[in-house]
Length: 299
Length: 270
Image (cartoon, rainbow over all chains, first blue to last red; front, top):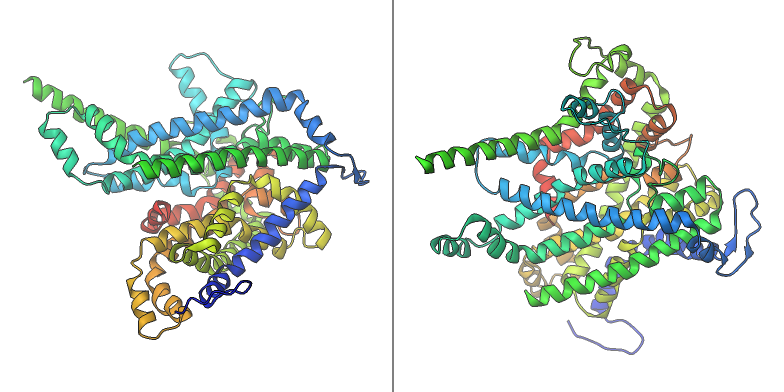
């Protein structure tokens, strides 16, 4: 393994590294990077599917998106609320479930199997299922709630109930993911700190708060990072549950761009909206990544 | 006495929580299953009614679009799994075993393109596909699906190779193996269990993928998720048929969860 350094060539080890990533890099370039560049190009043009003139109009489309009241009043708040609430609640529930399951009991294997179901079933099916369970007239949950004497909620005809349903579905899908990863992390923790805490007569809550949580911190941060990136681009559940309605009030960013492109047939503006989303995500993603790195160094 | 009461209380709270987990996570799926074996007139009986039938499944399987969609999804998921794993193994191995500027810039590339929302590149991809004439064909669906997996699975692969001790590969190199030899003959066999886990995850995520299917597939190559979505958003009222389709579409997920959960958990933990 002679490290031969030439100014412009690659040495043997570097050639090996490049060969290893070459197929992945080629696919990534052709089907992700080039389309993104085409999209960026399209976002500066007047380009609709019915009238494909493709005139260069500069940043007009970006201005149009940023002055669109639907984008400012519905799409942006919805996207961020969905991301924050869904990630926050599923993290909290996931921690609770993981602590609950982190002990031997009869039937634990069965519980671990059933909490895998939401992760393996397609979000499209989950959303269909939720739509049926929350159906205004015949849904099981609607009937159950009225049996309890609660007032009827028309789940899919008002903004906040529909949006709550989207969030509930998202939490249903992702709580098990947090549970499984955190449970695995909890089982990998060393037993000594817990024994020490128990000898010092710490309460279970205190042990959880002062021993478990700090030790899980790196895992939690990585989970939140991965989930936040995915939650931001949620599309499936929203599209199946509400289609962005009623009156576009539950549109999130992906649905907004999709509607612009395939309902309004305005490719230019859709590309601008998609570009704005990608930029926001780039900042959030890089910011979170630096946070992760910093916390990894500390712990 | 008090401690006994406390103990019982704690035990019952625990049992109630476990029961709640069952109800919350199995409930909706069970309702879907029950609805799928109801006749159209009995869909609206929730508690009552012993009227069951398998006709919904028969009817759904007679619709050529559904059968074709399931077959297409099956072929696409299988091909996408094989191809994307074969290209991400090398990339994950490189990320895990080497350092330097090439490794750092490839990692940064993967991370950045993982954060890009799907809609931002599926939208122009639709234009590319129509221009190239591969819109609504296997090739036009397969290549983007592989591209989606590159970032995510390279990342998972890296984590997986990080967990394998590299000393065997060093030993092989010292004994005169080439780098390729060390990779193919030593690292790959050791990585096989992890690759199996990732293959299951990859297959399921392609089967479940919706946005790509919705935008890049049409009447010629329907996929199961986009077909279901069409049922829900367009017809919208035949809940018995819809449930039957959904039950058929979630079969692979159920089978994997029951028989391959070891692999799923291992894949998720990486």
